[in-house]
Image (cartoon, rainbow, N blue to C red; front, side):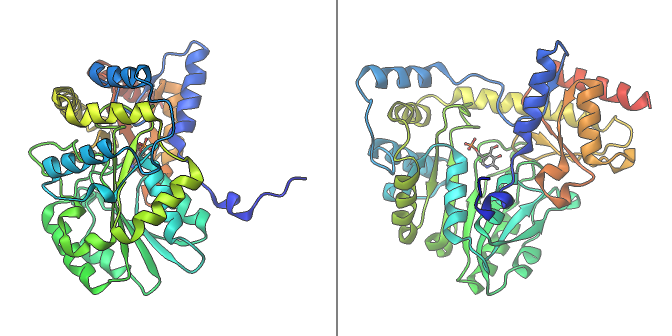
Length: 390
Ligand code: PLP
């Protein structure tokens, strides 16, 4: 018998990948499945980015790069942060990694151990809780409420901090809720954190460019007094439709960048050289493809919210960002997992149970509207027909 480390038993997963596998298996059997489960843009990576990667390969960029990324890309990231977040950072604080998740894994591993507490959004991206448990730390859920558009309540977050809190994880705009935290609440939290200098903050800003109705993105990097304990996570996956490229970055405080780089050296050495050149083309090239994609998401957002609110027993607040809708389904009397399975098996619509995003996700499901308007409308028609047939 092989004996695995106990930590493996604490590692969770991201159900979106499991639902995707089941949806694909049903599709392979000939079923017509509409996938509103997986969170990835349904657009292609813009051509000029693909061409930059191909050129890099032809130009002979085949070898290892510095573990923290090529300087040209780190400079491009710093320039992008200045442009879109209005914040000056030193490119030396940027670490390029294979996907947004890696910054998350490294930050949580750096602070997590038995006795440590880590606060994370719930419902939230499932990997936060999974990796916190994996490290042996105690996960402290920060509940997000439907009534406030799923933005956190700064006072509630601050009340969760204890002397054992090591890391606080924030995510705006948010997966799975689409919630966007307003400046007033972020200001309040940032001020309150002055009283807790022992807490590091991981700010997951991977959906920063996807905001609607004139909402502004409030980056934690804007708060100078927190800069020496802020880790900002972003990447190319969502913004440039590059989920399969595996390209992301973290902005680390000066005191942690060497440790983060050591983790990279131990784990993956560096990110694929050609993809780093593609990353430069994405940041420095034309942004119209991003604007068009976000405009398309905005249109679908309006359609999906309107349509979901017509399903008996569903109520859906308007998401402020990302490409998710997170309706309350308690009016149907059906639990979240049962709803996920029922709709996949009986209606051929893949979506994700709210419980995949934590305990406080019961009574909710997540729709990803990274799909065509036509498919969204058809999916909701099928859901209504399925639920009414009961
Ligand atoms: N953070 C959040 C909130 C996400 O939703 C995701 C992906 O779904 C990630 C990070 C990870 O992104 P990547 O695919 O670049 O690892």
